[in-house]
Amino acid sequence: MAVPEPFTGVTSSSPVRHHILSVLVENKAGVLARIAGLFARRGFNIYSLAVAPADDSQRFSRITIVVDAESAPLDQIRGQLNKLINVVEIKDLAPREALERELLLATVEVDDETRQAVLDAVAQANAAIVDVNDTSVTLMLAGTPAACDALERQLEAFAQIELHRTGRVALPRLSSEPTRN
Image (cartoon, rainbow, N blue to C red; front, side):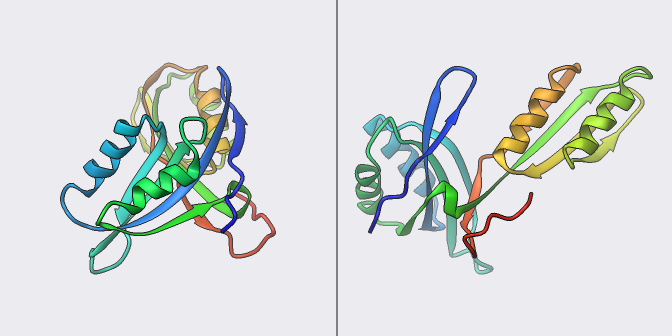
């Protein structure tokens, strides 16, 4: 099996290289702790982690792990994960072949002067207002990591009460043609 090329992107401090692993595990107590412990013991850096039930019976969970490819070779990570008894399947998702999404929720302060600018930023990012009061607005964006990064940078101009992002989730693309959004 060919090893997918890692994501090569740039953060504010340095270039990063990521691999996306989609790991199907038995939904049992302690599985996530064992996986996190494995990464910690081996010195592998987890860039992003998301977990959710993978089926209606909740017998299995899907863990999407975005791992720093600089911290360890992908083959070594896969080998260590395969040793865990509750791991059912591991899939490598090459960034060019994967559909990645992330959720950003943010609450920002607004007043008469800044309200329209916040609404413009929300509209430009294709985000949504999910809660509002006289002094603040909570917005949501479900989009690519790059879209979430861009919105987060725009929101730096406003007084932020709170901002939270989920870990990435990813699935293989159905076609080789990238889709919009």
